[in-house]
Image (cartoon, rainbow, N blue to C red; front, side, top):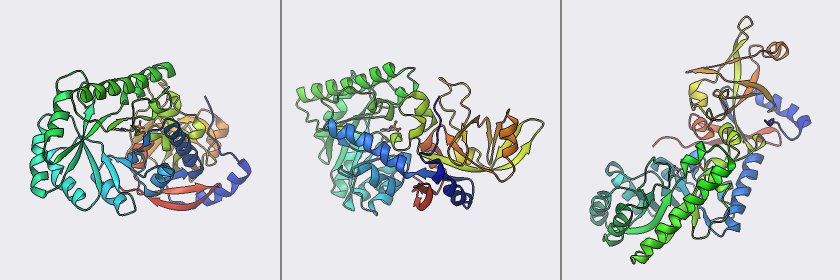
Length: 389
Ligand SMILES: Cc1ncc(COP(=O)(O)O)c(C=O)c1O
């Protein structure tokens, strides 16, 4: 296992003073690592000549999205309509809302389009094209709609070899006020792969299933402008992207304990930690309690399939060095871990700050209102997180 630490231990001393002043629990975002992670995926997209439409659900933060989309079109993927509104007020104008659209959100989607924002919707339901077309026609707008395809994750999407996979695109293409945008999938099952080879296999299937379906639809005379794929594990293990036009990874911008354990990145790449303070120590039980509980970290169980001892996150010292401790249990505002070693236990007096590398950075970030931005080992800024639905 690799250690997490700052690149310059001397400079880290200054950041410790600086970090100490922040109220805990709070998020610490290493912007150097964010830029590094962004650059790697940006290059994958540029080298393969595909559009990069990063998923902003990981951070919900305009400043992070600007880093992720530098050198690209500025198009992003969103998980909520609240993200669309917030980002459109701050310079972004092209969004794919990558959760299947349902009738309760038709009016808001139409309002977004009427306000001049480019919005793509997704569906995997045979009823939706007709029911969505009616309000779009009444409002006098054209809505862009993707077919959501299941490439093996089985969360949602139509199976590529079913009649619905051909029928829904035709319905969208034929509707007076809908535009068939193309096909979109997400290989979320790559998170459960047991080896890099298995991730690479899922990545190839994610691509091949989509390229094949696009060809089938084109054979039926249906134009397929966009073939959109993407997840963080698969984008880092794909051999080529021929036939794909767009990729939508999200988590790669921060990574987390899950991705590092899975092999998508190294622990050195993980950009987000939750800073917490020791609030209680129990010498007899060798137990330390910190003020980052389930609300601050999220209760994601993490890579438990690969590392049964992963707990709810890795405990690092303030400089980012791995203390080789895991958060073992969580209640709302309490995180608890066992410290077998005397020397480490003695250092963790009440008030000591630690940093926790959470299992899932997207869920941890969404619990907070802002990132404290670490640059050259100092907190230099505060970036807002746009939450809500
Ligand atoms: C539809 C869709 N696209 C893209 C992504 C990005 O995946 P990842 O965070 O693994 O990069 C997700 C993540 O949940 C998703 O649901």
